[in-house]
Length: 326
Image (cartoon, rainbow, N blue to C red):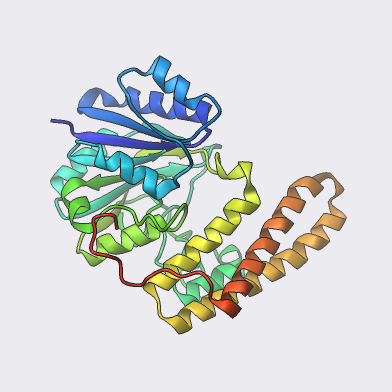
């Protein structure tokens, strides 16, 4: 029987994908595993790398970019492990997957387990999060988390006050690397495919908690996340996708008035950011290319939020259909 099924969704991250696969293979001496790569229509040679160099890996080729949630669900449905690991293609595992497996075996009430995550420079990523509410969203919009990073009251959804050095129950863990218990997954259901990219991890963790499965941070395993490997190719588009995903989450889990207040906060946040970036653009001549992309992203997000505040055009049903899709 297979212990762990690793699901890697890839979109044009050839070199990082190869690094990710190699790091998983290096860790596989203490358990039986399978690796499933779901490719979302890459054109950079990613598919050829898997076909030519990793014959033992199962490759699923999508003809187009189906999004993070749908592609992962395709991989999960094809997997056979007692545990499923969702792994971003820009992840490099350092150590501890066997420890994660042992910990899950010893604690049958845990549905989701996530490792300690580092940036590419090996600094800590504060990946443990709180569920979004109006107060912590406002704190992020006002950048209070940067002024008082060690305060749980002003840190927003980010747990920057938590040193990420102990095992801890948390609201949300990011979808870059998650170990999931098969039994819990069958009860809770797959990722909500209405989230194309971003937001699906918050929604998933919330559903696990609602079904009485714990979501736990586990620092005895460690990975590096080379973030924004795909999103850096089209920053404005992905910024708008993140805004859309946040809106979807709020529409699914909060009331109408809270949704309107959330949109108001987003309009304020991106408008102020747009104005500040304009001034920065005028001062920092050497960084104008990068700053102009940030200006475009802020403008796109502000306009998107304003449009949906006024017209309420985007719709997602609050009550999911009875399906294992979400």
